[in-house]
Length: 338
Image (cartoon, rainbow, N blue to C red):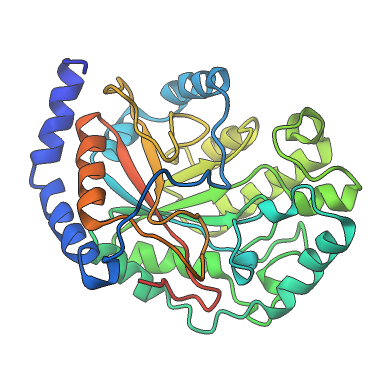
């Protein structure tokens, strides 16, 4: 392992008063009987994907220039974030969005037309979510405002494939942001540049990481994304963190323009998924892990990591200079099932 000044600072953070109470609360909560099931083996690949190494290196270089140094340093002290994967297809109990990849026309049409009609999370209580996050020692959260399916958890002028079209109708993104901000937690937005709804509308192949469907080669998709980012960055107060799960071109630049203090994570720094680096990294980074085996809610046969495993993961992440972004998947009803 590298032995340099940054590693020493990271170890000091791990042992400092800021991190220790979080670790203790986190351990007490996750070591309860609710988490008696231990995680076995390697987790399955999640629906969110990491860009190839060249793209990741380029993004990190841009991030070091455009993310403010003081914001990066403050981010590194946050230690532990709560990742929340929740969308209209939580009703299916499948991996989020990816059931659309390679699907036939009949399935895609049912997904886009029928799922919104039955999405009604009557037990959703963002204040309870925020209280749970604080109890567990989380310092910030990142919420899936729009995943790859294109379903928006906020009202938008860009599409009717949104929460506004559901029986629930209320603005979930606003409720989340207000509750977590009120609880003193950092507010992060997850945003997917990929949009399967728009690709389907265009009559294009539903796919990811295929050149012809990427925003830089699809002007309508780029305009669609930028309009949504403008809505999110002008209508929801300060956005502390932005996690761009896909090609960040244009999106991160508009985010920084509208809110210079926003900190872009994925799309501007290394964000390894379901793994930790072998050595300490010189710059800010964030590891993304699931509590179980799936990013979104899995109704049956889910295996959760033990409290001990999670604490070990957090300690190793901090010792190597990173943050841990730990994912939960709420039920379709809006309840976090722990």
